[in-house]
Length: 114
Length: 114
Image (cartoon, rainbow over all chains, first blue to last red; front, side, top):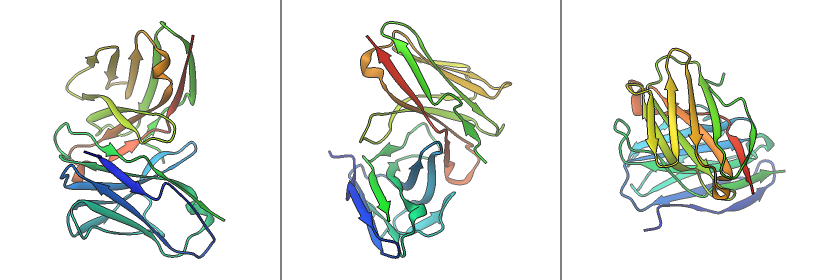
C-alpha cells in the first residue's frame, strides 16, 4: 500500500515549456487535490476532483489544467510554464469530505521554472 | 487574503518541555480544524483534529485547544521530543462549503533541542 505517490520528484523547466505532474493513489479515494506551497503562504488549493471524470477550480487555478480520467490518478498540467509557477506541488486524496477523514498527501514535486 | 494565520514562523524548545503552537482564523464559519506535521522532503501527515463542538481534543502527547470566540486554536506538545522537529500546519474548513475545502496556515517550524 503506497498511499499517494507523485511523479516526478524534481523538475526544471524553461519559461514557456509544458509538463504534466502525475499523482496516483491506491486507497480507492474519491477526492483528490493539487496544492502548491510557497514560502510564507502555506498550501493553496489549485484544483480538485470529487470523482472520476470531474474536476473543479480551487483557490489559484490560473495557468494550470487537470484531468481525472481514472479514479486513482489525478494529473496536473502546465501548458506554458512561468517563473511564478516555481513552487513545491503536493497532491492529496481523501475518502470523505464531510466526515472526519483527513487528506493524505504525496511527497511533493519541486518545480523550478527559469 | 489568508483566512488562517500562523504568526510564528519558527519555535525552538528544549527536549522535555512544552511546545505551544498558535493558529488564528478569520472566518467564523470554520467548524473543523486539523493540524498536520511535515518533515523535509515529505508530504504533510495528519496529526490531530478538532470539531467546533469541542474546545479540546487530546491524543497522547498532543492536545489541541479551540477558542471559538477568539477564533484561535493552539497545539500543545508535551513533552517535546527530538522527533517532533518538523513544520506544523493548521488547517480549517467550513463544512457547509461544497466539498469541504481546507484553508491552510503558512506553517510553524519547530526545532526541539537536546
